[in-house]
Length: 172
Image 1 (cartoon, rainbow, N blue to C red):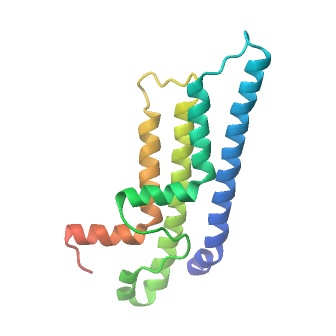
Image 2: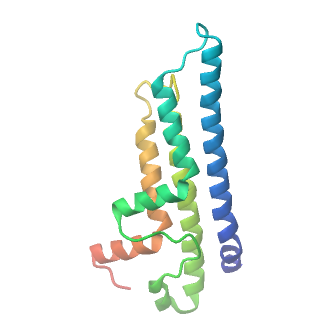
Image 3: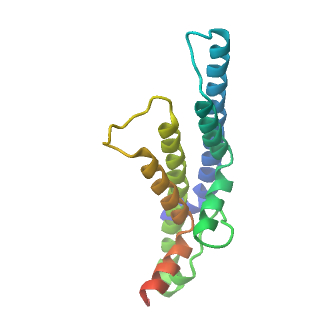
């Protein structure tokens, strides 16, 4: 059941992530354009700073091009291009009949990594929102960066497993 779930839902869940991220990016950028329009119509009542516009525009561009930014994040940590599809981990072959189940779990974890990266971008947008303050209780930018880095690592979980295994000298 898990193998069928992973095989049947991999492409639709990635597509849903790209569509959701693109739509959110366009909406955020449209929102900042509306704020700029209101500020030009009512100069004394609404104010928009250059920092508001640029920060939201950068976050919106990140959302619209989410797959490229996941790939760029992975390239800053590793090497190679990310493939968004079912994972076929070479180390799973040693587990016999459980190899397909292991690959299915890794595929679902990879998809979850994409959604964690998207959550990191949403947290980054929250950190750039005008008037956001945490009063020292929560560092939103740090949480955003960790979500983005962790999400990129999860997207390439088979490569990360091999790297951890090699680094720690594990053999299975």
